[in-house]
Each structure stands twice: as C-alpha cells, then as structure tokens.
Image: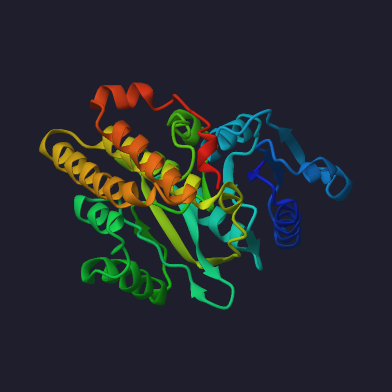
Length: 325
C-alpha cells in the first residue's frame, strides 16, 4: 500500500467527513487507507463514521492524551509505505497528495514534505519555518512573533519568494496539520514525543529527523485549504495557552545545553514571572484572572525545575480542570 492517512478527531465530526470526502475525490493513482483516531470526544458523532465511509478504520481512544499520542496510535495501525498526518480541518482540492508522494518517494534523502497551506479568503498561511532560536522565542513570548523586523521577513518574505520560484524548497519543519513521511522513518525516529499534549510535537520530531541528515521540504505544487475549525478551540483558550508554554519548556529542555539553555531558561522564567505579576492583583477581582494567575504560576514552577526533572516530569499529565474556562 502506498499511503496511510491518519486523521485525529476531537469533537469535529463534520470536518472529518469533509476531509475524508476531499481525499477520496482527489486521489486517483495511489493505493491508500484512511485511519481516524478519536481522542475521546465528548460528542460521540464519530461513532457513526462507518455509515458514511465504511472502509475507514476508526480507533476510539478511552482518554485524550494529546495530538502526538493519538497519531502514534494511528500510525501503529497503518500499513502504507508512507504516512500522511492530516488535521480534520484540512481540505484537498486537487491531487496534492499524489504530487507530494511522487516527490518524496523518488528521493530517500527527504524526511518530511508538506504542502503550501491556504486559508479560505485569506491566502497563504504563513508560519515560522525555522527551528526556534533564542531570538524567536523572545519575540514569541512578548507577542512580537510576526511583527519584529527580522521575524516578519522570515515569516513572509521567505515563503513568498520560494513559493514564487515554484520548486520544492527546504525548511526546518513542516506544519503537522498536513505532513508526509516514510512510515518506517516515523517509527525508527520514535514517533511523536507524547509529552507534548499540543503544539511543537511535529517541530521536535522533525528536529530529530533533520539531525539524522535528512531534509524537510515544502512543495509549492501541492496546496491545501486549512479551514481552522480547530479541535484546539474546543479545549478553551487558557488550556491551549498553557500547553503552548509547556511545550516550549519541554522542547527547549530537550534541545538546548550549556549557555544557550541557561539563557533560554532565564528568558522563559522572566516571561512567566511577568505574567504572574500581571494577573496577581487581577486574580482578587475576577475568576478568569485567578485561573490565568494559577496557570502561569504552575508553568513558572515547571520552568524552574532542573532540566533533568523537567524531562522526567514531562509525562506527568494533570488534567488541570481549572484551565477549561
């Protein structure tokens, strides 16, 4: 089999149906299977999936341990030579999957390939295609991620110029909302680190893949619509923000060492300390602010742990029900 396409669902059944329909409509030349992994959705509509697409494999998780964990389960049931990890809010309008497959299957030096992602009525979806640096992290945590001059150039100019050329171009990492790679590479790399509940799990995986000598690409001939009917939105803004910070702490603890790690740790502790100070007085007057204060205080405690303890504790999930507001 050529492709195994893995889709993780959390309360977005209609998006899953549209995504699968767009896949089936646009793949003509490849032998493929579709695997849907449900992350213990509150809305159980996904159990009706076989009524619409009887050939799709459905896996029902008994709990939600995050995007990476669910994809690891999906890949473990896959049989294709290549896997495609697709968010349910991705919609295919042409043979982009076949274009990516032809590209990656003809060069064993390619690790991951992804398409250009387009937001309906908004154009290209820009993102930072380089691995995080001390500078980019600083801009990210002080909300200057897409506006600081150097960041703005790397966000917009880099993608615009390379897409205009029209040839596949190398990037550090491809967004996990739509990415293709060899199944054996995914497995041999260890798959996603399941300590990442949301965000940066694909960045960290692709960091390991690129460190092994392979190259990650965006193929401008492949384009998908990214509707952003995000499952993350079902979890609440505070929960998502908490997980974003937690993932940064874990990623940097795995990647950095020496002075860079010391500097990175200093910056994130400073950023979280400012947030704690900001929400502390507000916490006496607003339940929402009290929860934000508590979340940032929890994150500060996590960031202040030793590197070894962060790495040991990263699998210690606490549902933190207060985060859902």
